[in-house]
Length: 444
Image 1: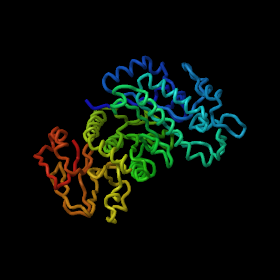
Image 2: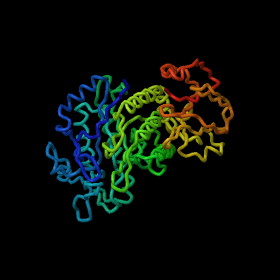
Image 3: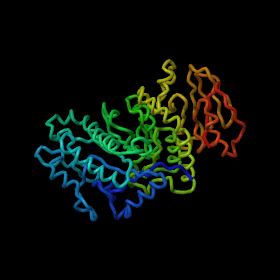
Image 4: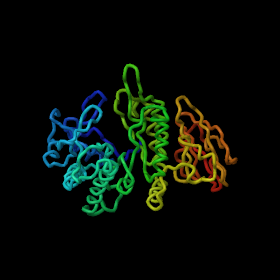
């Protein structure tokens, strides 16, 4: 058993096989062949207090080859003249991996109201969230309704995309009556990847785009931590990555496939970020998935519980972000600016708020992590599983971190974690709460 708040069904629009892998039909309506009984499915999940989330973006693919469409949104947008144009005044067909798409002209006064109706149909079916993908690809030679320079508009485009989605969310909430307007569990939410200066004003959640299914620092699991922290100090307080990464490559010479070990370690990492969400990736059959076997499923279940366990603190951090702009996940220099050593850290460790220090395992085969205890603290650190006390600040030490026991450090949370800890037969021992200590925790 494990907690589920939502099913994110990216393939609700149907999928097709291309040279890139399994890809979606960019025509924002449910594919009733793939999801027959869609409305009943949403209703059944909702009755179990599980929300359904979907996927959309500001692009539309021609669907003349799609067999079971009810609407052709590309042709509708073309008829309304709300697509970005090329130099010849025709819809600009933008290459996107294995197919070309038309982009909505978000500067056109008709575009927002038209797309909000699409979102309304989705929400009317019971959907309560979606990934508002893309927004970063406006061609720099495009012709816009506003007449503005496309180079200048390029960075403004994702802001307009976020604004349309946020306006719909706010308008929907204001039009609802009763508990829907009061209960945050009944609200809508969307998350996106593209952004510019004002995107945090409009966006609700963000994720880091498509990492490789690898251990790399330039575009793998390590880069997800770097992106998490750099975006955090850039105003993106609520960010996360796909558990396991996204981009797999299965060519004769070059192969990137998500290993089970990488998936398990990414679960451990993301249990301490703002959102705990999986992704099958662009080539699901090449990747280890959370449902692949008993080991992956049980590991996912346990770290979903870990993520749920600090919900009360996450709520506090969300409020703090709204008031002060501080991100949920933070680089150590935000709280230890006078410690020269923390300025040399990148992906090695990070803070969740001020109370949790996470030191993830980000290398294949690694069973230990080097933990740096920043200078400037007055309290001790206590490793829960061994009982070892760390009191020497401004120093490093190696801590055991086998799969399933990621090193993290919590302040004065011992009683809160007790329910999780008491489930461990191997590491059970007497625990005492003390406000003078911080706790190095490896969750069972």
